[in-house]
Image (cartoon, rainbow, N blue to C red; front, side):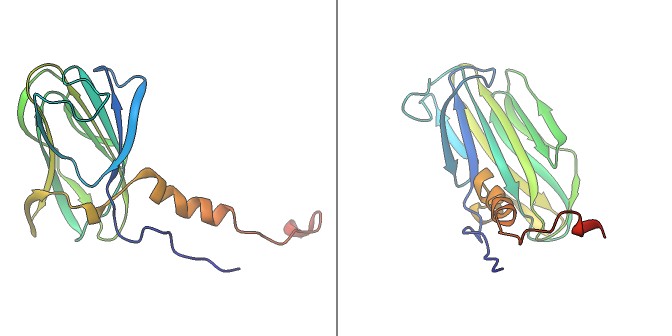
Length: 175
């Protein structure tokens, strides 16, 4: 049995799902984005997506470079929610603009944590810029190399579950 590392050893970004409404319903487009670092102003984020009243869900995995407590920061116009490891760490789901800080969360270096960021734009300027900071890390946009889309993380699981195992004789496993 030969196991090979997943194709994406370094991060390539997050899976982004775009919707033409503010309720995150009926995906219009999916793509991998290198970071959440968008200042769309009054423009559409992509062909086929409205300039106003749209939403985005970014999903994937994040891998911290050092072990310590992190705070996530997002500059958002309008609403935003952030989950790390299925824990809601920031909930500003309202028609607003500003920079918001999450509750602190302790993360281990080199371990991948599930991350989900949900965002909606109502009218006017649209902005979504995700940053983090820690005692050793100055506030910065989270780098592409620390972000993994859904398929990169599930690729390893698919690889492991698809390994051919020799057939066991009936009942021999529990003898």
